[in-house]
Length: 439
Ligand code: ADP
Ligand code: ASP
Ligand code: MG
Image 1: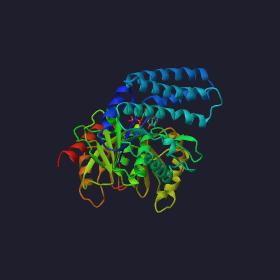
Image 2: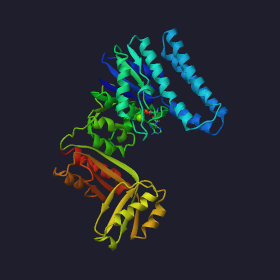
Image 3: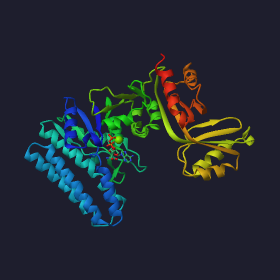
Image 4: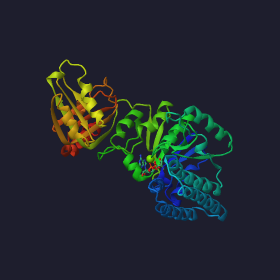
């Protein structure tokens, strides 16, 4: 069985919900994970902010506006009065429930309950719509099986067992609809898997039922962001290894977050990224397969700062790198690239909030140089060290571009170059020409 997840924009209007319904009714049994309608979770966060600030009037105004939107969507979605009325009543009960939280003390606990309502409404609407259309669809509530343990990690054994109970209770259903994002914690309280967590739900369900494939459907704008092609004229990326996808996640922050696909990766279940606006396109398949000897994508990230610390004390010393890294850690600043020599180390960071303090502290250990407005260019593909030739090709492409750092060997899937931001375009073009067009 496959698991299909549709994001907020893909269920963002009555029409979009109808499109999703068409897409999923192909006679194949499946589990469908839905996000809240786009904008809803953000609005629920805003409502919570008013309630934290003890402003129930502000909260109520937003609640009323959101409720009016839902009424409108429901009127557009259904053809028959009975289904329309049934869904209106359900959604009204949800908004009344949200309103009941405006009267009393408001804590993290209440906020989690409010944030859960977006997915609870979208799944109710789509399930009712499918049933109206005569499809054998059932809603299996995520709060009955999706659970985290005392360390706030998903409890896979519990999830697997309880999900099975839900599926077995509805053997005749063709489509099982469930909520992404929401869960219960170890104490049975309503909780969530963090913003954007619907992808995580799909991955966890896929792993729990040993799905044949997990499909992450998103809309065309989302897909554009998911598309690792930063360079023009390269062909779309059809297949990625989980690790290649993880490398690219840093660049196109909107590609699936590596922690979200971890359950799928461990269970060896392929994840396919698909576009709701172009459903027949093959999308991108992420799996544990490596396409031998193939370079997949070239990606870039701007606003990088390089810091070099040079010290003759580093020669043959131990503990030098630890001291240097501890300074970054104390300012909660992640280091991205690292290159070392016997007497110096260069690092890149993209968060410069504490740059001044970091540089000051580093001066205890050596001479410090900072280069601003740099850019990481990353080549992703099968770059296993025993393959010969690829490093040379990449380096050759960069022959006319001043390169500040090179990082290779950190993983089997990446070579990164640090160049000036002003050289980014030329570097991307040169790499694209060399790696994709001369074979
Ligand atoms: P999709 O990924 O298909 O766009 P999602 O349902 O996964 O849809 O996300 C819905 C929306 O939630 C996103 O478009 C974005 O506005 C918001 N969102 C997702 N992840 C985060 C996050 N980590 N922090 C804040 N907002 C987020
Ligand atoms: N609706 C939640 C959010 O907007 C979860 C998700 O869509 O993935 O963050
Ligand atoms: Mg998302």
